[in-house]
Amino acid sequence: MDSDTTDEIMTATGRALYEHGYANLTIQRIAEESSLSTAAIHYHFDTKEALLNAYLDHLVGAFRARIDVDTDDPRDRLSAFLDAVFDPAGDDVGFAVALMNLKAQAPFSDAYHERFVELDDAIRTEVTEVVRDGVESGCFDDADPGRVARHVVTVLNGAHVRELALGESPAESRAPLEAYLDGELDWRPEAPA
Image (cartoon, rainbow, N blue to C red):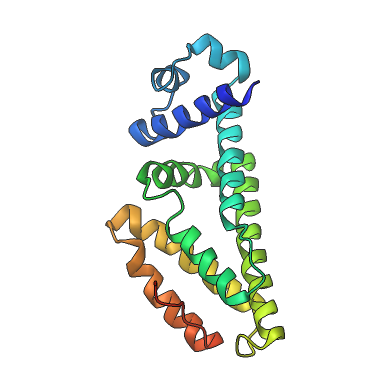
């Protein structure tokens, strides 16, 4: 499948999940969000489950690309990581809603569960490495990198739910996380220039 078709199907899937939710999602509704027919989508994906597995892979890949920053400075890496996770799709609420729809299905789908475990592992690994590098280089106070990473991931998951369910802005969750990181690591993000 060419990348333009894949991108179109993935974008349409996200829009359809946002508009209709998981329970009301159909290949027809995905087709209506694209220039493709249901037959064309079925040509590439035998089932809705296969399509949603590919969509989740797409989301995980996009997220991994966002947290892959090009700097060795642990302070800058931590700032860039927080920027990526607290603005994961450039204020695209559709992305967050689509992700939440699929998270809600993880207890019932081994494939979704595996993807979310993979995403959690990627986030924890990134934070663990940043904290470890910062402690070893003297940029951060001594702290247990794994414990800090687990706390960060837990806050991020809670922030995601609070944003969608309560309408809380990501900044409202980011501020106490930054205060926690300041207390644990003696790290504060630099003020924007």
